Length: 95
Ligand code: FES
Image 1 (tube, rainbow, N blue to C red):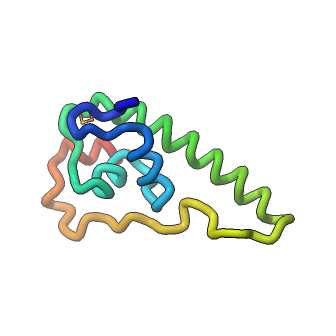
Image 2: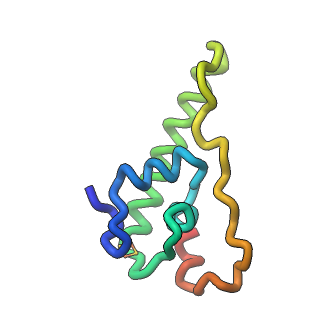
C-alpha cells in the first residue's frame, strides 16, 4: 500500500526505514533521500512509527529473558541532516 504518493513510498519501504533506525517521518524521508512535500502522509507515518515502537518494545521485553538471536530493531539511528538549515520549514513538521 502506498503511504506517500509524492515519493512512491509504500509501507514496506517505510517499515524498512524504521527497521534501520528511522523514528520519525522526517527520518524516513532522509532514509530515502527525499523530503516531505505535501505532508498528507505524515500522520500515517507517525502512526506507523508508534506501532513500530510498540513492536520493538515487545521484542525487547521478550529478549530480556531469552538470549537474543539477532540485534533488536531500532538500534541504528538515522543521522540527522548535517546542515539543518537546508531543510525547509515545512519539513520540520515531519519530525
Ligand atoms: S504524500 Fe508524502 S509528501 Fe506528499
